[in-house]
Each structure stands twice: as structure tokens, then as C-alpha cells.
Length: 463
Image (cartoon, rainbow, N blue to C red):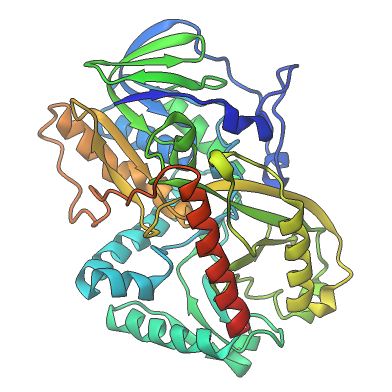
């Protein structure tokens, strides 16, 4: 396998570092952290493991490798700065979701496999909480739980089935309606909901930067402003990175939705975009008017094109979703004005009492989405020394922060460390390979047609 960077898709995205060497923030989260871009790689180096990508997946892999084998020589390269990409732009929802939802996972996988996979996902949620506590990571973690809200009869029927499946599998979801629902949120648009008490929320940019400091304290060498320009599948692998070069016995490709530009998992993991708008800080009185000031649950609407919304630490409302876009030839964008306007309109529909609230920030980012919406972990290459994880399909905050727990044992054992125990009961997506979606323009046309059908269903159902 040979990879080569195509810079064309990046021309429409904000560069992480400007001409004066300063980080360029995209969205609110980046404004809450101080970023001094690190020096790029300019030399020829050798290491045991080279990690490509300074997001949650790469940072987690670096952390677990060094915890299990402290003398391992690990180098991590990041094209921009750690946390500038998806791991610093997402909504900050730490949830156990796989696929479209739990019911979808059960329908596709069966009870036994779905239960085992979701157990791993709940372990991933607990891992984020545990890491924040153990290492005192400043990331505004708040244990909010997660409430899926129904806005129409068709979605309520599906939600009841999902609620039943959750209890059959041994999970403690709660069905909420009328007064029980109003204790969490009040809006005439929401008729009922399913509450999961375990998820939490974080500030993703803060967590990314805190994880960078943590792995560096363990001895990981982090090179920012160092894009992977080409990779040759040799033994050891050869990486042309920035103005330098790396020879590595193993490589971890932690690129998710950005793999398209490298030709990795091309047309298997698509760079689909989601967008977010953010309000000014709200008063307690304003939050009380919609019943959101006490329980502060993170929320999501039950529809094909979901809306996800939550409170920040300073009581802003983050409101995202409404659409998910794949741009022609895999281009990357930070903004889409039509989606921003649609989000603001939907926000006022859900919360008419907050119709005069001002919006202060708008931004977008890329998801790595597979056809079946399931993630994919594994090894590839002529020598089996190229590892990967991605395809989180919009539910990656928890799993990407846990990725190293699954990958590190696999990588260390492959390197001959047979005393390292395997991850117990590895979930189905380890070794899972996403379906291929074809070449452009057929892929683009097919995805647009599918998006249209999903939108039509949402309109017909009134979701």
C-alpha cells in the first residue's frame, strides 16, 4: 500500500497555522485554549511506532502504548496542530452509540454481538471520565446523561422499540414523557424521550490539548505542522512527513475522515461534514424558561438528520446537525451558510421562548462515515505493520479516546511482545472493513440521492 497526500481538497479549509506562525481558531472551542504551534519535523528519524494524526485516536494510541511499554519510541505527527481537526471541533458528546442507534445495531448484529459491542462502548465512556479524574485533565467534563427526543409518532414508535431492546440487553435506559420529560426539557415539539444516564460532555479542544501534554510527559515526541506527504509500505515503513522523514517499524493511521486526502480507505470512509451554531451565554432565567437549568442533559432529536444540542460550561447552547454533507471530490469546508441558517431556524422552532437569543459562533468539521455507520479497526499493508482506526460516523468522542486500549495490545503483540495480553472480548469492528462506495462522480451522486431520500422521510414523518 502506498499513500500520497492530495492537497487539493484542503484549499477550501482554514489552515491551522497562519503565515505568522499563529494558530487559527475554527469555532468556539479553539478560542478556549491557548495554542502555541509546535515545531515541525525537519530531520530524518527512526522510531518503533509512528502515529499519523493528532486527534483523539492518535493521542489515545500513544498513551496506551507508552503505558504498556514505557521504553517504546513513539513519534506522533500532526498536519496542523493537535486538536485543530475533528477532535477539537465536535459537539463534545461522550456517548456509547454505534451505527445509527442501538436498535440499528441490534437489527444488524443480533442481540449477543450488539450487547458485547455496547459494553465496550460504555467502557469507553467510563474511560473518558476515569482519564479526566486520574490525570486531572482540564476539559470541562460534566456528567449530564443523554436524552433522545421524539418529535413525531413514527419516531416515537421506533424509540419505544429501542427502549425495549436496551432493557432486553441489560441497559438502564429510562422512558420519559409528560412531567418526567418536562423535568429535563420543555418544548411543544418534544413528545417523549429515552434517557441514558451514563454519557457526559466535554470541551473537546481542551481535552485534545490536555492529552497532548499527557503523552508528551510520557515521552512521546509530538511534531505539529507536519503533514504526512507520502507513505511507502516497506519494512520498516518509510514516511515522508513535513520536511523530514521517518522510518518506523509500525505505523498507526489515525486519520478518520481525513484519510480521503491520503488515498487511505478511499470511498470506504467518507469525509462527511456536520455544522454547529452557538448562542451567547444564557441567563438562568432563560434556561428555566425551557426547563434546562437544573438537569442540563445533553439532547438529540430522533430523526435521520439529527439535531444535537447541549450546554457549555458558560451556559451557551451548542446546536448542531440538520444536515450532513459530502462535498464533491472529498473537499473539506469549515462553513456552510445554508446549514447555519437552517440550524438557527430549527433552534427557534424548538425554543420559541429563546427566539431573540443571539448566535456568536458558527463552524463545521468532518466526520469519517462508513456505509454501514460502524467503525473499523485493524491492520493492513504488505507486512501487517500498518494499523488504523476510524469510521466513527459521528459517534467517535468516546471510542476514539478509548481506541488505544484496543489497538495497543494488538500492535505490541504484532511486534513480538507476546507477554502483552490481548484485549478481552474484542468487539466486532476490530477487523471489520467498510464497504466500497465507488469512484467519483458516481459516489457523490449516490450519496446525494441517499441524502435526498433521508430528508424526504424526515419531512413526511414531521420529524
